[in-house]
Length: 164
Image (tube, rainbow, N blue to C red):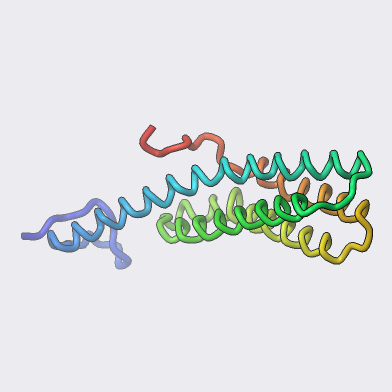
């Protein structure tokens, strides 16, 4: 038995799909919804880790503290969580309709890739720094730039979990 979907095929005509194809389509949509839910939850981990790294680096920079292993640890966690977010976002990009893709590219995807690049450049600059003061200053400034971009381009209208 064949069912007709409301979407248009590439040729512009309605296409027919079988029950087996319909089951695959439904499970694919559930999988994308689960990835979106994980993406939404990791967003809060990124924000939390960004606040922690900025608080730690600014207090260490302004207080003239020495570089500690905790600074390196939080400096690795923030870009790593951004990498996870980027991977989940790339997977979600494949589920977007062409009309949604253009808007998401300009308003979310490209700025977030920029934030990931800023965080990684900052991490690399910190590794190359000689003194503790320079390490703290570079970490604070580069991670601030990345965190600012993240905060500016998060779609805040999305709920924590899609089913809430």
